[in-house]
Length: 320
Image 1: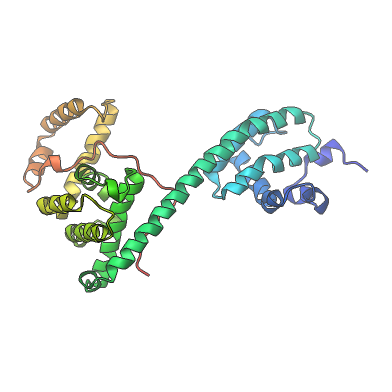
Image 2 (image 1 turned 90 degrees about the horizontal axis):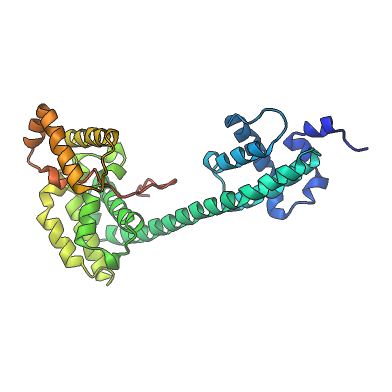
């Protein structure tokens, strides 16, 4: 006997996923079917689209939100539309044709955007694995092996953060590393990418040593043509590197950036940024005096214009 519309519409994921219905799905779809239905119904409620029967608008809104609310591999997202199509068909909904059209329209973004994110994460993991090989080789060197356990951890953090910013953040392999790019990351996003508990003098005191060790290692591997220029830059900027984290300056630049954004100042317009900064300092004379009593110059910091660097699953690198 066929189910009535009212019975069919009340199907739960468990009631839908019978052996007979599973048999009509591919192996990959079967693997993720239960998770997909549970996730989709949960996301539907979260986006406030769980009123009445499914509509094309609910399908579009739910599937648009799905990738932001679940952490699943690419093959999961490939299976979403076929599983939902079978689920809707089993419920004999009167607007099935419209729902299928909505599913078909949502599929490219659902699959392709997640594929791009998956590819990006895979590429990042490849960079991590490469840098871990470098770290392992360098920690076998006597001058690194003789560091305390805490300093070895700081060394690892510095190397990973620098290399990941250069390769993933700036898109440059060691053969293309140069002084300008190094300066941009060290006096820019480097400190912001560190965990708060890593922003301590002991770590920054090791920055010149860690950088020169990294550059020497890559030069020995014939991978860093600009090694000498980069090492010379580190030597010239030793004081700025070991003192580049200052809570007062961090707070100042955060406040300045917020003020700039409120006034819609273009961060890429150097003249506009300079003019706004001067006006800001004149409007905050106490802050200005405090900043200029330090032994560093504001020009050492470039927080206003930072490269885009955001990873969904950036690793915390700890010595094992």
